[in-house]
Image 1: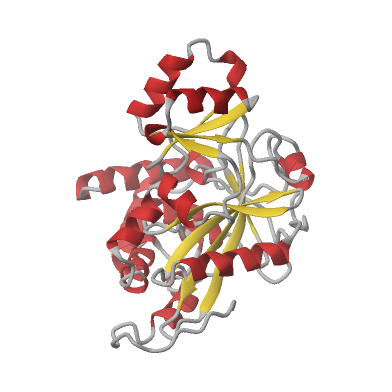
Image 2: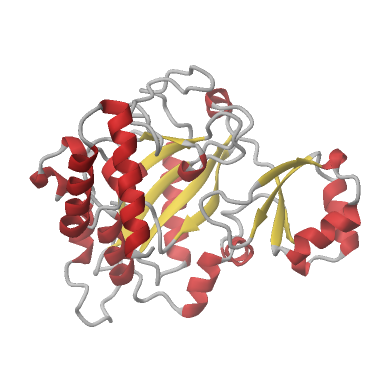
Length: 340
């Protein structure tokens, strides 16, 4: 983002704060600019993490965009180019994490027309998504009986580097929260310089009204999760308003205290995913909870996202700093894999 665009985005955010809570636009704007310089805070950090309510000493505790970017560079420095490709392209990711990714899928550029048509006929509903998509952009939920021209749809998907996959059937507990959208678990995980694995923070991502995806940047709402117990520990937030959501706005479902099913299996899955790629040092894993357990949706490397894992009001920067200690030392120490 250019400096000018950053300034415009910050001003727009300051105007939004004035509309929602009063005060002076210029005061918000200047304070947010200062937070950018001192803490690496983006305008979204300032809004979502409510920096406007915090003292500077409290702001130092938060994993901002700037600090997250530094952690990414340092902790993922051992990630090979090939592993980086795997994390960036969903069809390669699905192959790498086979068994943890359990749903049937087709990467259309590598799929013959007959196989593509057979896949569609075998599923009433599919998810269509770009292999390199981010932030939930370009994801569509399609009822296959509504596809009028399969050859044209095939060419469209092949040209745009798309995947088609079967819809995940989520656990009924999460289906009640927001039906028709997979409400996934995000767990950010880091590997320290001794190779030990640490859970940094977690949240439950829920789709907003009418959303196909639960992404925070596509109208979703995130709720903080207690890492030990696997339950919702407080109200949720979105990335545009400053209100708290004790109840999901689409279903009026009361969220604090909600227990996530299969929590220990989820923690085990995260550990197994880290074991599959020893070079990875910092990643945000998205996990679906199913009636039988859980499965991996994707791994967000190079932009794990800090806002949504800090909605419990506890800054996660100190945990990342501990993992960064000794990052400049030479490699070669024996790795140990432990859930922290």
